[in-house]
Amino acid sequence: MLSHRFTSRSQGHEWPSYLQRRAAETRAPSLKTFFAADWPAPETPIGEAPLVALDLETTGLDVQRHAIVSIGLVPFSLQRIPMAERRYWVVRPSRPLSEASVTYHHITHSEVAEAPDLEAILPELLEALAGRVVVVHFRHIERPFLDEAIKERLGEGIRFPMIDTMSLEARLHRLSLWSRVRRWMRRPPVSIRLGDSRRRYGLPDYQGHHAMIDALATAELLQAQVARHYDPALPVSALWT
Image 1 (cartoon, rainbow, N blue to C red):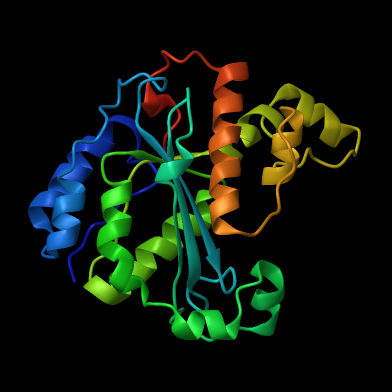
Image 2 (image 1 turned 60 degrees about the horizontal axis):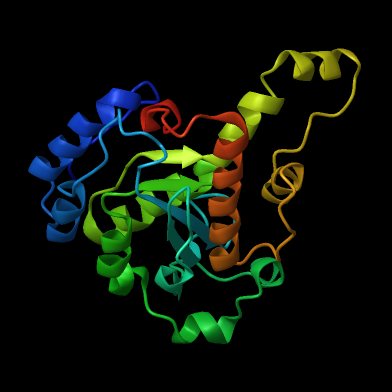
């Protein structure tokens, strides 16, 4: 298995060299094509960067014990969301589907029994992600679960730039002076969950825990965050991680 460690400090302007190195080193043809894609340069304005919102539904939260059960993708820009280009897959998880997870995301045993393994849809998934800045709400689900799932099937994992809309909300509401005042007053922290974050921008409530809908909700949230708090000329590297 190839070593491709990428530490939390390897961000911003170091992404291009990481992607180039992986393109040269990887043995899996689909990953080689993915890493060799035309990725946005760190100085690309966020208003011009090609974006894709990604959401995964999983059988649980522990990457070592649970697995992906559905994937939703919505390519978009800050100006528009072309819904005709959206993608959605139910996949057969490599770990058992629990009753709790069925209740949570409403994907049943019969659906996953008839669904393909993730490996069957990987070429289409990687093609849809390649060259775009991936936008998620809480990268600590999408990043490790996708990395582990691909590692199980291809022998190599995957990393790429992500903008985390939850992290952007945390910057505003968990790391600010006002958040420290709230803690001093013993008031609960501001919620940065997807639905609560959207309400702060006047965005409508959607049904949660559906990968396609949550991907759309995340795309709309980033559009609202940039419109209210950032200049579209801001380099994309200021927001990705």
